[in-house]
Amino acid sequence: MIGRGTLLWLALAIVAGVGLFQVSYRVQSLEDQLTRVNRQILAERDTIHLLNAEWSYLNEPTRLAELAQRHLNLAPLGATQMVRIEDLPLRLPPLVAEMTPLPAAAAPPPASDHAAPPPAKLSAATPPPPTSITDLINRTSTE
Image (cartoon, rainbow, N blue to C red):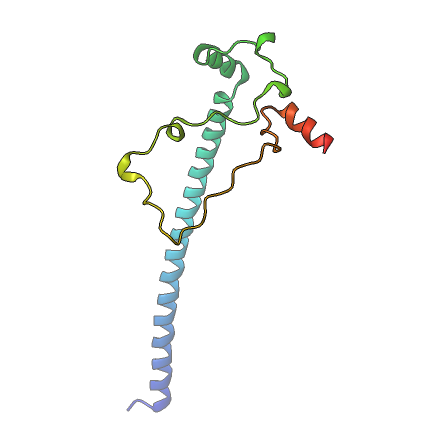
């Protein structure tokens, strides 16, 4: 008959063999994964190198100047195109939508008895709003 010690050593050898088998297959799969990742890294480096070369070509100053001349129709700034900041209007003109009246259906409902009183009219002593930056500067410097 086989002794207990022999069975124990045989079971231990089988467990060690199975464990070694599992570890060797796991290492082999990790090596395959590492090889794939290294190939991807090399492919990405080649792509980055190609994109850097393309970027350098696209941003070449002589090429950009030629494209700008062909497509943008730019011309040097003329003296008549320059304006002093004081000559600029203080406010933009009103939009077309602000100048068109609302249709009758969208008019506000009539005021009720509990409505607030209408705002008071501006007195004649109130100066008109400034129309240019120069007016605004003059008005604030005198106050």
